[in-house]
Length: 186
Image 1 (tube, rainbow, N blue to C red):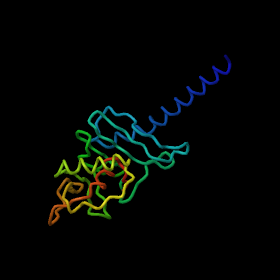
Image 2: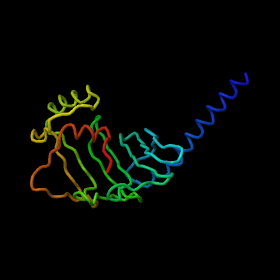
Image 3: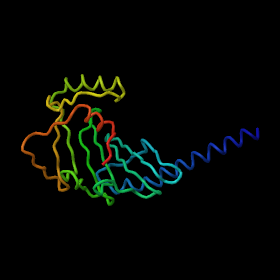
Image 4: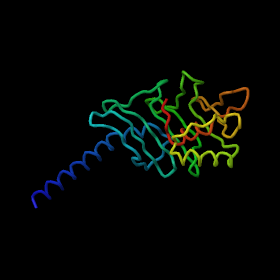
């Protein structure tokens, strides 16, 4: 009986600590106004020292993620602190990046893009490629199919103005799959 009580108390304490750490970081989600509430933790990889990443999701099929260092938000490449992924019917529709204050912010070292929209121009072709990638759980080297013009991207700056390119920009199916699975950090 005594060991059962100790086991119960240990479990309760662990759950309380986990809930506190999630609550501790939940306040940061309020900085990104376009991330709707209510939201909940989707993935928490923060260690006891307060280092790692955390993802929140909501009923709008958005995922907001950020990294912390010693329990404080960590600025990433280009002063980006948050990434907001928006999905529709299970497919990534756009990625928006925000600064530490939750203001839309571009990656200065690239094309200063703050919003990347994804358009699948050839759905049947992508579904075939996606099946191959899914079957390999992402662990597959594929030929770059950018020239097949399957997935197009549109880039926008922090003012949501289009970043002009002289021609349509396409990305590889595997690259899109990686974005869709949130395998990329700025």
